[in-house]
Image (cartoon, rainbow, N blue to C red):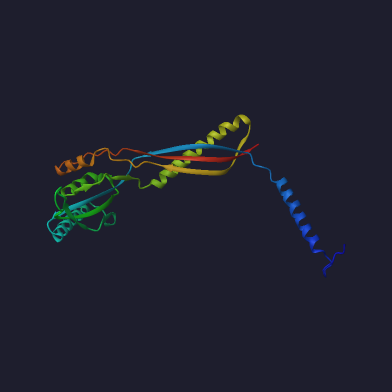
Length: 246
């Protein structure tokens, strides 16, 4: 068989085969040099308990009237009074949000007739953030005196929640590390670098242990509401893979 050579005097087919062969040899050598790393994995958990130091309160003022304009004017007046009273409790403006006022017709549906328009209801929602829980009883008194019709249970939180989560994660990682060390010591093996780390944190928002209705009743009666928030636990769980030193 005759093989035509190019101007460089090299056969392109043989050159291609040579490149494939070189790549194959190089890959084999690299596989021989890289040995698998012995590993050990363990899960760990960590907890941090702390008392919440802030709360978010949400609710609404409601007014009813025969005409929509009257209902709208009445609820705006209630909302203005509420805003002024809350701001007087040293709550910053940026921590108070008042939602848009809505007006809806109210209907009565008799069993044996057409529906009847009975009036209009105006509703204005609000939400405020308290960064000092010592203000909570006084703010509830203000809300009761302002005629708040609906009030949700406060949502408590931590101003330093990120820091608390990091503390819980650190304890979880240390827990996993101690477990691996305990398993390697009898084998006379050492702990190497971290190969993989999976982290998860969770916590359940603490709810006020006193019912909101009871708090409002005490506040409306000019008695300072008694509140008990308690502590909340932030939990972190980790899965860590370590290299093993022989």
